[in-house]
Image (cartoon, rainbow, N blue to C red; front, side, top):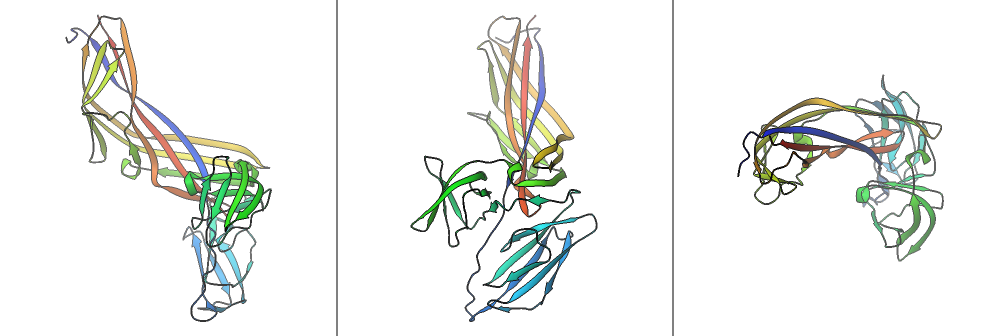
Length: 334
């Protein structure tokens, strides 16, 4: 039966925010040009307004073995971080020996700390395949295998991200097998800074609904989440029926990470923004008790989708922010 005189409260929203960084990058091998030893060199910058690169000599194609000088100049408010693609490191100017079709990108950032990256960092690109065997070893395969040795730190975005210290390396049938252990970001970054200030909408998020089971329905209308038909049992004493819940959330994230002398000196992660909640629910009490409470996770959100990319030096950093939308129900009979 429905409880008379019940006082009920809904819409207690708890925002749980977690941020993490997974280092990624790319390294690709040259591909043979079918036109007999004539190769292209493609040079780009990231972000587009971060700076420019002078190429000397600048030609449409190069003979095998030709040397080319690349000089990066940062725009106002940016600093040069390093090179990715078919070149790594932060030498500036950089001398490149053409061995095939090559693509190199200059990375610029807005950090005020000049980045210093360990030479032990080995950024693996998405052209490789990385698997993990039952003993925790990494198996790396692809057309161009990386040059790894003990002491290197493997960095990759494959399989959700890899950051691992190499202890031994062997090769079997064209596959590298690396014995590794977990590594830390500060093992490869002596100093550097990453700062992200970004606004998102729910349309940019990947959203999962752990509580949406059975007859529950989920919709996305006019930039808001709409959940209906959700039932929450509270200690077998009461049932909360969410007739309809409408949730609008446009978060602003402010994230900063700074590393100096191989140590994290500053870590800041702040979430704010517009939040609107409109809940229509019913409570049916099945037993007499003083106070009933329960909390349920309605939605788990990841911003942005796909993940964003920033740079610390020549090491790309993928960033993702997570938020949970929780509905708390409290019933006091009397």
